[in-house]
View 1: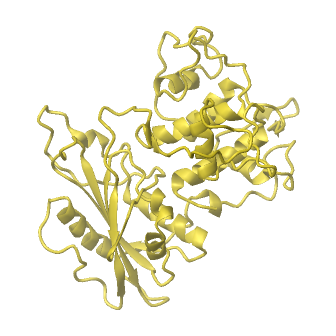
View 2: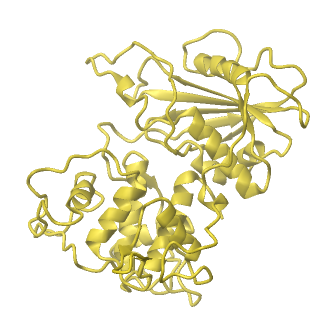
View 3: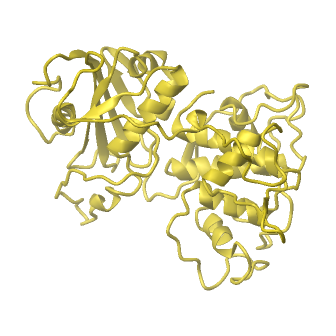
Length: 399
């Protein structure tokens, strides 16, 4: 079932189709912001709407694709690949052809000498989809992208100049996989960098928080929140910072966490609060209003948000599920199972789909006794772990 929390203006897209040397599977691509130049197509829709406004918005960039591939390789324990400008020009020609904007072959042409070609990954995708994430569900595709022989890649991206029959502008991504001898100087190569992915992230030797030790449970995750400025904790009277790991999460602070997880998007909150118990001057007003505008939280039927109320584990699941939908254009691919994965959660109860989605994606697998404890308030240390794993889900990683 595709559950829709639609923030786009169009209906749900068809599934992404990806092929790799005879293999076929769903592919989804993740994002980590990186500016770059894009191909320009002058065609607009019949009603004058210009899709180019999305070129630098929700669409994946070549730098993001490279980062995602290297994150997958880091999880697999193989060396990162480097991108090459000449190989990318060849991949770009293939992408243009797939988008109906070029002529010739989709197979690489003349490449820097000394290389061995190991295949091509091709993806046709739609705006707001995460193109590489579901590669985890296709062993053949994952094996291709994590082939230890591959040392260099070429990446091409092109947009179709026309909408499809469902009214979607499609983007085509091509990744050519090459192997060059160790130490070889390959003209046009950009040195590979450490990928930006949570599994590759190493926590500092000194804790960023006075009340969090480097050996306690969820230290890595709490330190990651501080590093990404998703939470910087409290400044105490002596100038030190504390995280207060065993304090429960309140709904106003949850709004701040989710807003920062989304990259602190440019947003001007309304002059009139969407909630009758939230004023425009109180702490985290902007973040709570952003949740409302993006339907990550619409509060209660009485028009309240209840910012000082603690967040229970069932509501936490709903918050994270909706943020994932926000990232993915308003929907999440998940079919709630007939049999619950938790002994104390039953089909039909509030947030059942969201809690089972957490389990299916290993964001939360509950306790050793098989329970989920839906009505238990969430502490700040556990919240750090949930957000860390959600980021891994968003980046397409499996731990």
